[in-house]
Length: 627
Image (cartoon, rainbow, N blue to C red; front, side):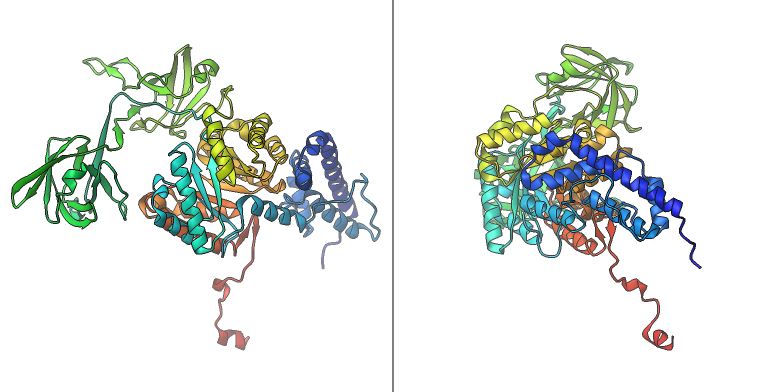
């Protein structure tokens, strides 16, 4: 026999739900001035966000357990329709307690976001910002463009065909001419494949990064593939191209530029000899001619520097001599251990490793420049500093006008390697920096005419949002969406007010910049914070972009890790997933597209979808017939 319902218990639950409802309405009244500034079409969403904030000001776990024990909704899926969820539970509780159904005690206005309209508003706002979804999945895929997207139409077309919905252009790289070419290639590919698509241009913002080290060299490493015993599995493939107008290899390979006049003389089966950076004689064998370029192979590892002379040998004779052109700059990183001292200096200086005496004792600490002079003004002793996405950490001990002394407290046991152009995070420091730099405003001129949305880096306050809205309006680009990049502690803590400010001039989206955010808040908090951002944005009916290191091993090395596949599967809870560039980016887009299509059968936001499971068929047809 079922246990009879306790009327006192039911009445207690009714009172608790009514109290939550009243507090949600009271908070809406308290936020009335901010809500009035929200775009009229988005006001229901803004009010629902405020209702959700009121709900989450309380610990309702005990209430949830008591509701679940009665077989009722525990409010665990109320983000998109808070008042409607409270009212639905309130009504059922009254039906259990009595036949009569009184009006709500607070006499609030009719609810304009219910169980259907809440999710519908999120879908609608997502399509306005991110465009229509592709076939098979409602989660969009965004891809950061490599430089070659400006000159390689086939790459852009392959990305669109594989499932890329949104092209992300990082304004920290390339220039307007390259961006315009990327946009043109994207437009052409979409037209050819009859696919929708959007463009996001990511403003750089006042990025705080490490500067150059004094010891640097233009150098590449060429090495064949070897097995576990060190035996060669396959030779190294090298793409020989002209230094004056280098081209991208058709497949991932080491690129070695040489002067064009020399390369034109090179033929198949020729030998190219040089003395590498280790003073070892090395040889490349030319195996194929591709227009003005050449494919070559080598059986031994080589370290080749810019300016290295190259001898062309044919039939055991020297035929011509060339020289290696510009290569990527390689540096010896600073190696830092726990207990070491690191000096931060202005960006006008060069960094260097620690100086040692004859006994190996440090007589002058390592130093690294940082890109923003405001750090020397705003930082304080005792505050934390994190380098390279938190791989290295320390405490500020001393500050001078042009020097910050840091005691390293966090690094790998065998030493943390610190290179130029790595992020610096100061989670305890109140940095007084403009959200938009002069460079951002210059790039905004182009973005206002070419982009569907702009990524807003280093946003921290509603005033920052207002500043970008003003700049877009001044360019007649009010229709351009804003994507708030949540990458600092201040941005996360101010997220509710950032959302309300952004909804004044929609469309609006949020990007979870998980790399910087994890460094700022601590890696152990990242999963929790990621959830909170998803909940708040769902309450505001604002789409979320899941970013940073998604399938990174696949994009860079050609194979994903198991943890990355699980992360990619969880990303189905967002409205868009961002992949960064890499040699295997087309394969990564195709792989991610397949994962998202499969996961959408099982997961919608926080709700598990009970699709028929093939594994549930534990009996064959004959056994079922016998039963």
